[in-house]
Amino acid sequence: MQYILKGKSIVTMGSRGIIRNGCIVIEDSWIIDVGEYNDIRGKYHGYEVLNMEDCILMPGLINTHTHIAMSLLRGYADDLQLKEWLEKWVWPLEAKMNERDIYIGAKLSALEAIKSGTTTICSMYHHQYDYNEARAVYEAGLRGVISHTFFDWRRDEDYKFMEDLISKWHGKGRWKIKVAASPHAPYTVSPKYLMEIREYVNEKNRELRDEEKIIIHIHVAETRDEAKIVKEKYNVETEMGLFKYLDQIGFLSEDVLAAHCVWLTDEDIATMKARKVKVSHNPISNLKLASGISPIAKLLSVGVTVSLGTDGPCSNNTLDMFETLKMASIIQKGVTLNPTVLPAEETLKMATINGAKALKWDKHIGSIEVGKKADIIAVELGKPHLTPIYSELSHLVYAVRCGDVKHVIIDGEIVMENREIKTLREEEVIREAEKAKEELIRRLKER
Ligand SMILES: [Zn+2]
Image (cartoon, rainbow, N blue to C red; front, side, top):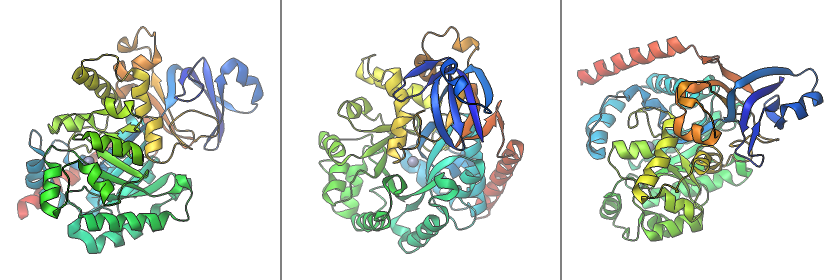
């Protein structure tokens, strides 16, 4: 397939900045040229021109932390403390979920992600052998990093699930799917088990190229009492901070993607910088569960790579990355009493190129540049809330809503055109999800 996308402006998030009256030339799954339409059109004969002149074209958004199967629990339990929310509500209902439910929930999330402009999703969940998140993401035509979650209580089975995930899915679909290993958190995985997983991942990665490596995706420092809980449960030293603790046991490296990072000490921040730990900032989930606010303005100022995530659709309660972009920016302005922190461009980087770096994928995604994969979204202008237009960056962070995404291209394929999804039957996915919810509630009442 070879074609040219013609847009009103192209926000490349790369070295070319913003190109007005621009176009992107796509061949197979790759971007082979970018520039002003008038300069480029003569060079390519026989390429179909897709007119998207009512749109801003930009790299697809990258959601670096979520649990996509949990869309089935959207709105099931709100307004609770994290501990109570997990132990009394989420975990008992999840215990009733079968692999089919996980697949259906993941499909529903994939649908929502594409419709809201996300082209790459990084999800942490319980892997299952036949029906699982990886299958749903693959069928939806989405790009994804799918992990299996390790817990102390599942020690024997975890490696079997992980081996299955790697053998069936790592590199699937011309590397559209990659896998990650996810120790759940320092308070649910012992230091010994954390190091076992670290060594397991190192061993798996020994022969792989950097962009093919399995990353480690973990929750760290989400709540205020987490360091104290870890200290008491495992009899370890955490007073200097959880990252300091993880570094002391030898766990940290540049392949660690840590979600949340709300409660950090100064030693933690210095350690994260030194070890090149990547952060997934989840402002909406952190606010909704009253976990706190991650000091990302500080993390960014010292040079830590901070990306953005929604967290699961049960604690957000959507996968809307445009909402997350705006929140991420304005919260930091509010808590630092400084409107100059997190300007639009820096915020947008978190959801694009920084997300790519966090997933070890910046060689191929995260910006619109020659030699990268064609993961592109078209955001429709000409609406009251997007008029007039002085700055594309301003609109993309502060004014665009997820429903403004008109077309989505992933790996060179048009996955959504005029808001119609090509890869999944939208009504069927919604119907299946509603039915799965009814069944889940019925099984929960049976216990
Ligand atoms: Zn999470």
